Length: 81
Image 1 (cartoon, one colour):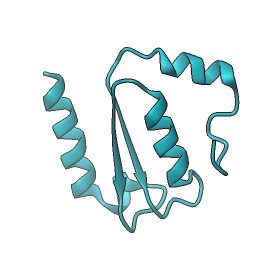
Image 2 (image 1 turned 90 degrees about the vertical axis):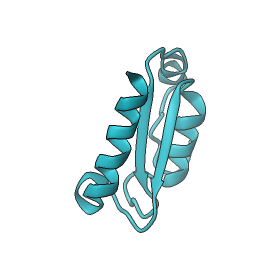
Image 3 (image 1 turned 90 degrees about the horizontal axis):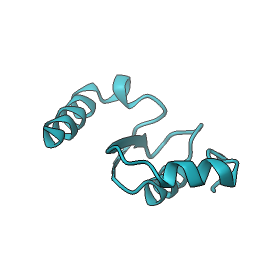
Image 4 (image 1 turned 180 degrees about the vertical axis):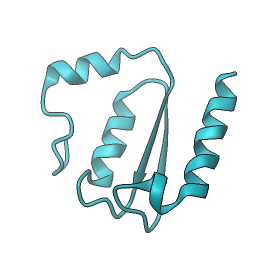
């Protein structure tokens, strides 16, 4: 993985690669804790994933871009129904 080392073990990667539930990953492209590349790589591992990268957003999209965050979450949930 990238610099953030979000997926430190092969065992963990194998487990998430077998997830059956839909997953929404939201990340800010200015996140200094979890690099965008780590979110992208995680999205490439999970089979049923929707990845949203918010421009000019840091670690907390739910606070920094509340409207976009809520729109994405609501859209994701509606697709599940």
